[in-house]
Length: 478
Ligand SMILES: *[C@@H]1O[C@H](CO)[C@@H](O)[C@H](O)[C@H]1NC(C)=O
Ligand SMILES: *[C@@H]1O[C@H](CO)[C@@H](O)[C@H](O)[C@H]1NC(C)=O
Ligand SMILES: *[C@@H]1O[C@H](CO)[C@@H](O)[C@H](O)[C@H]1NC(C)=O
Image 1 (cartoon, helix red, strand yellow):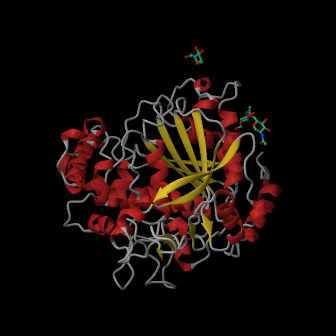
Image 2 (tube, rainbow, N blue to C red):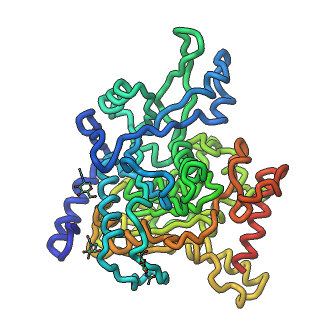
Image 3 (cartoon, rainbow, N blue to C red):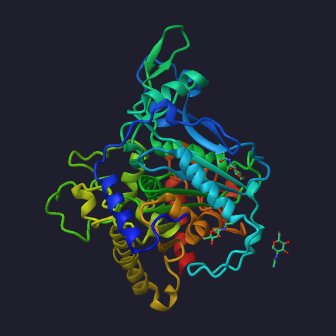
């Protein structure tokens, strides 16, 4: 169903979108809102271990072994009764501000039914050069996961789950999960002696996504896994774009693709903006809107903080996250051509463009002229412009979807949405592109192409590996 076909309807949809998004406050999820299990999807708690650097900075008195055994839970909807030995593709679908993960699961499943229906799909997708056999994707080869990022308003919902399943739900403040912020709950972990409680370490929403990626790329669990897709719409598009930029993405054996649809804002990669910044000159480029630290020199988040700071330091040999994002990370942007909803109306967002569609178009231009352009020129100067064919283009794609406003179902069920979600790397021939970058757990992932030969790099530091990777990428692109 595409609700906004035709001029009148799309004008109406625009008005409704604008209305619905004007106040940034979202509704609390009540217990009754959160469906449990049906024949197609099951509510499932993904265990998330406490992060390494949180353990390091844990308050004295707490035993490390206790922390190491503690797990929090990222609630998610997952396909019922899947057979892990058959799964070739995992589609992680990320909800918007409303946290209605179940409806994202359902929309993604509808798109899967379409993608696997026997009706022949046209293979002449304008944005695709593939000549794949569209009927070859089977429904039981695809696993759909829709994580639920609870926030502090959702007390009734997560407390009911915790009681029902004896779980410890991870909860974030407001929409902070979209920027990788630390959790606010659970705030307590239990010691080995009865009654002993300690302040809990915090968990970034990106650490929770890291666990999802790590699980799906574990060949002992999913021996046939070929592709992991992390796809988000609206605020889900925000977390997808920012996780693609900063995330560790620990996927030693499986390529991970990101689908960023109609986000309210982007993390911009340079301080330039398409619109005036006069109303917020000191804050428009701070994380989550840009890569700058706040005036006190700190990041608003703990996740990979030291790695990111090193990577942005030109003197450091750690690969720059902007280069990694624009040239290595596989990102597909989808924009609804009717999405004129203003979404985030803060000054910082407005410097990126007036509405979802405008910010999307501006971001693509930013990527091309301010990020890739200067690198292309520098390389042309060094190596000659004849050698630049295809440089930096291959890893990002963009599609504009007719007849869609700010509507995840419309986006996922569009021809372009289905193409990206279900036919990216359909032949399974891509190698993994996971890039190790978290110093604390460097042994867990490797640059693509060397994952099966990890023993060739037994004693290298992460930064040396990244330097080697950067060199090999330069060669690959030239
Ligand atoms: C589950 O999926 C089937 C198609 O595979 C569909 O016919 C059915 O309506 C779905 N059930 C629910 C509760 O959505
Ligand atoms: C397409 O895939 C189906 C099912 O796997 C197979 O039977 C058919 O021969 C394939 N067609 C082509 C043209 O490869
Ligand atoms: C799949 O979606 C396309 C539009 O993108 C539509 O034309 C087609 O009828 C749908 N097929 C099924 C089986 O739902």
